[in-house]
Image (cartoon, rainbow, N blue to C red; front, side, top):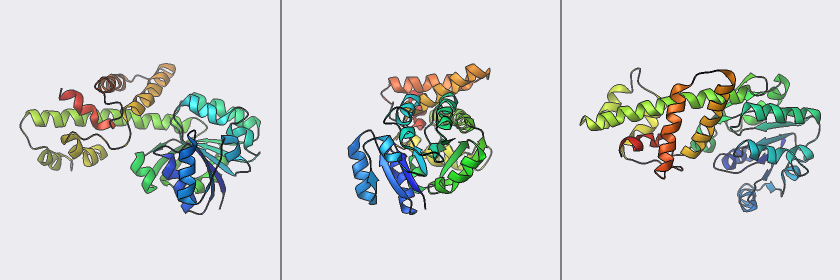
Length: 288
């Protein structure tokens, strides 16, 4: 078993760190709000630290799942950052959805200290984290990935190396682009069914078994019909992710017209007070 630090105990990080402890790893956690780290340590009979550097000291692996590019820089760098506490030969694994640019930037800083770096964003939401079945998309040197993969397996249903550092983040962008289009299409289909006087459960039963079927339809159509939007990944987070996608598209010359449009639809949902609603709430703007 490995000595592991986990930085960031939000709705994803808290259960992910728990799975590491359940698998027998020696886990120390850090969270910006210390009370949450204390609560995790009490629940899992683990340790917590006051700074990322203290959490990371003498660890084989340091995992992070924080908010955005700036949050990641803050927990990695500086006198109290994780890199200051990590030993040469250890591997830093970042599960935050951030830009590929910051992943490459921090990987260079880590390399100068002899630290490995794997960018490893996840898909599967809060339920996937709680059930230990996340999909993990990784970028990094093959040796670093090979070392980290057995530890990541504690909370992963699928884990794959996509290329060098940054490739994991680029793959996660593909994931978010695809989800945005599917949720908008499903929202319009259900809205159309309502206006046409059709019973949504019957429509979903009829079309979900064919080419229109999707995870979103199977798992969210009923709650969308009931106007319930409290199922995990929030609109505010999706807009952050889509902003990263659109910025990267501008830099690479990719054309993302549908993504740009759906991003604006999510902005409208935020304006309706739905920033913390889950991403299936796109249908709410059609019902106004």
